Image 1 (tube, helix red, strand yellow):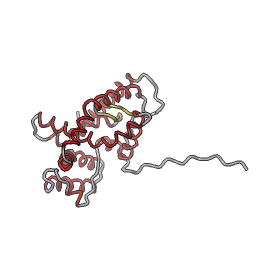
Image 2 (image 1 turned 180 degrees about the vertical axis):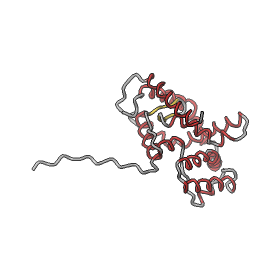
Image 3 (image 1 turned 30 degrees about the vertical axis):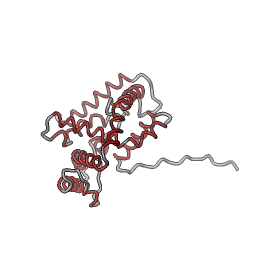
Image 4 (image 1 turned 90 degrees about the vertical axis):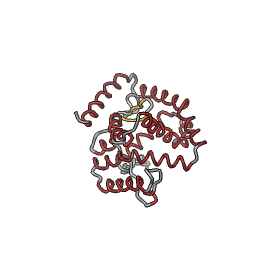
Amino acid sequence: MTLVVRTILMAASLAVLFSGCATTQSAVPQDPWEHFNRSNQRFNDAVDRGVLKPVAKGYRRYVPQVIRTGISNFIGNLKFTTTIVNDLLQLKLLDTGADIGRFVLNSTLGIGGLLDPATRAGIRRNEEDFGQTLGRWGVPAGPYIVLPLLGPSTLRDTPAIAVDWQTDLRSQLDLDTGTRIALWAQAIVVRRESLLSADETLDSAFDRYAFIRDAWLQRREYLVRDGDVPEEAPLELEPEEP
């Protein structure tokens, strides 16, 4: 059974699972499992407050910026193979060539990705994943899902995560279990540290859950369409009576 077939079967299984968990009807059509999703977000927020955010703040406070940048570059370079694979799957041949060049340049002159000479050379960094590939070929996003620990997703993007793991060098390199876990854990810390600046905005939101959901869905739509998102039509005003 191919990986794509397993992905489709996983999506179908998730649909059955989450439909059984939905107990209330959401006012937002793309979020029919809102009650279930809000429960998962409360769990994720508790983990974040108790573990991730304090660790990320300590990481920012005690690790010098130059070292943090090097670690972020290194991790980003390891997972950049996912972008290259999905460039190919989307038949973006020019982006594929540019991203291969970026990966090779950063892996060599950039000392394994610790430095980022590709950006200084003017090579734009693309961002692609298997969920975007499915979207490009017409697979609808489906309902919004909040995954425990992993956060926002959709029915289309959730099984695609497994495909992205397989195209990530951290899953393919011959590493011992401890090193592999350390790399993934460090990536989580790096990711959370990069989001610290957004905390104030999230904390001031009237409905934190709705704010995250709407922002995430808009961002995913932007990525799938490569920025070609149609503008909302302006409201039509009723003509004034003479």
